[in-house]
Image (cartoon, rainbow, N blue to C red; front, side, top):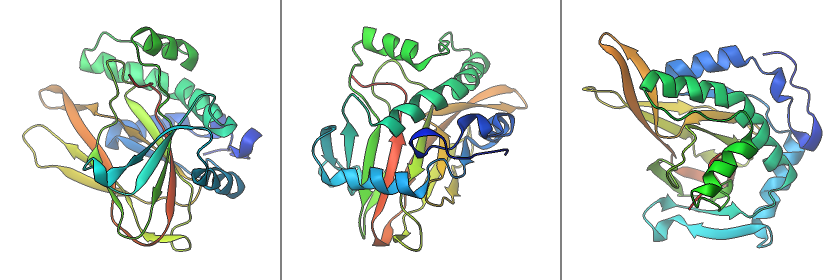
Length: 242
């Protein structure tokens, strides 16, 4: 996929990925992996922040809401440097694909080139709370299949970055995505990730070409039960919340 040497804040060069191939993968399956998006040092630094209260706007215990088991914290503004850089850089690369998906689905909404301009639209609609989050799972924890919808403005793609190393830090806890096609049973896909890998995936639906035209396919994502250890994940959602 080209050069992915780490740049500022321990982030791989976003421009170094093969975005044509990534777009093809997203069109075909609704998800695509970005290997080595964060280096191990940055993964460890971000994971260690979970123990602090400073820098977060809220904490959610999943079991209290029927979301699964485990917990997560939403970052407050200003976001940590690597989180902000990923949100801006990845949005820029994904906005053209998001617009193409909307065109295929007959949606009138088009997303601006810059994430700042998109956030301005969110904030004008009352969606002002930051949505990037840090998740923590322990033995027996899991995340139910869900969609991250926080208001009228929804960017159709999001990214999760695995901050822990499978087999060393935890076992189990696979990222899972399901897809419901019209008049068909659901299709499930387990996405293998290593520490620092990111996965881009559809937030709620994507277009699918069929014999009778373009269909709207509904997707949900989650995490399977953790067997041992502890798993941290960074979630990058591009729209803000009401």
